[in-house]
Amino acid sequence: MNDEDQLTALIKERSTQFGDWPAKMTMLLYSMNDTWEILVSPGKTVREEVFRISIWRIATQMAVEFDLKQ
Image (cartoon, rainbow, N blue to C red; front, side):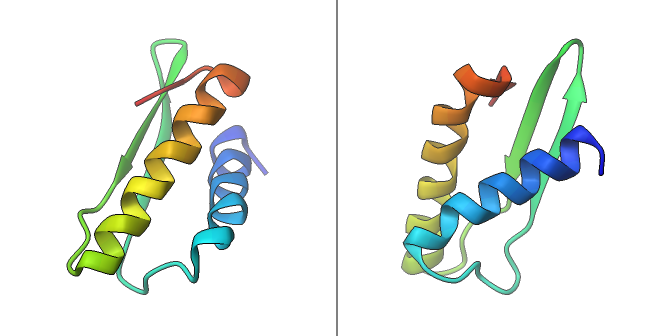
């Protein structure tokens, strides 16, 4: 498993505290210029948008740990 896959899995694991991952919500995580980029598709409902914001919070917390750039 490469770094991107590991970080994606960890973000998804940490997001379970906010509920199930929305079926059509996608996340793209990739390395770029010695850092990380993370993109999450917009929510289509209020619940999905709240979930998306929660994912961004998780990524922000992980930024220090894994040098993620948002």
